[in-house]
Image (cartoon, rainbow, N blue to C red; front, side):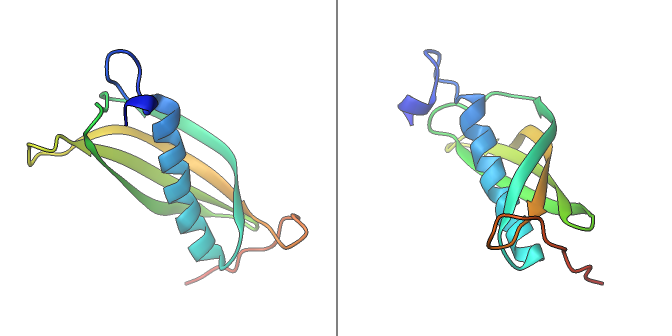
Length: 112
């Protein structure tokens, strides 16, 4: 939407980062079977701008699992609504920690 963009019609990087964080959070919560919170984001690189009106898709995968943490690799792709081709616009690794009801780190079960 226009409120999420600069004067040139490019979407703010923070808006895109928020979308990626939400996608990574879904993966972390599903894998850890409960609440998980973002503790770090590494290596965000912007490859191309996203314009107002573009379709944005976010794809992620679990990259690493520790005792209480999970690293999620996330990519964001854009597609002009009048084109078929998608272009990768950014990527990053988000680290989440599984937490209990008191907000304390809890162990993540290692799935095989």
